[in-house]
Image (cartoon, rainbow, N blue to C red; front, side, top):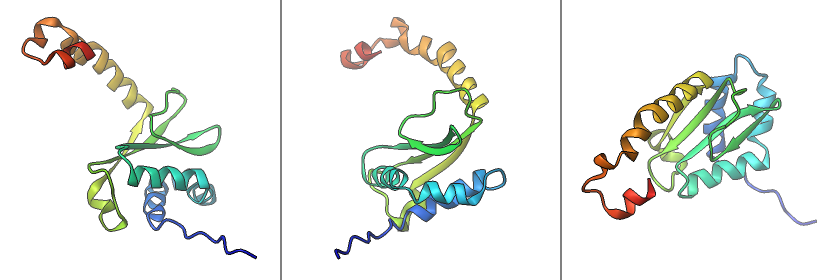
Length: 141
């Protein structure tokens, strides 16, 4: 028989601890562990740690945990965790220093979207505020 026993990414327990800290009082630990030990979760966290992706979001969807590089769009999410890094690659030794963890509620996202749409977007898209901007940036907005 072939040896296909793959070694688990040593960074996964770091993520698991933060997920347990957020949902551990309301969710069975087995459910969290099932998720963090799943192949999709391992791939997502590895990709986050080793690629240019600066965000990864973890949340519950249809009773199961999922991760995505985009925030959840459903207003049914009561909360989700956002992991944000400041460098392209993070290793086990520097996860705590390089990755911020933020729990965000659905109300917080709603308020952030309102603030963006009512304050920031009008400021950024107003032609008078774009004087002196390079053409590339002004056209993007």
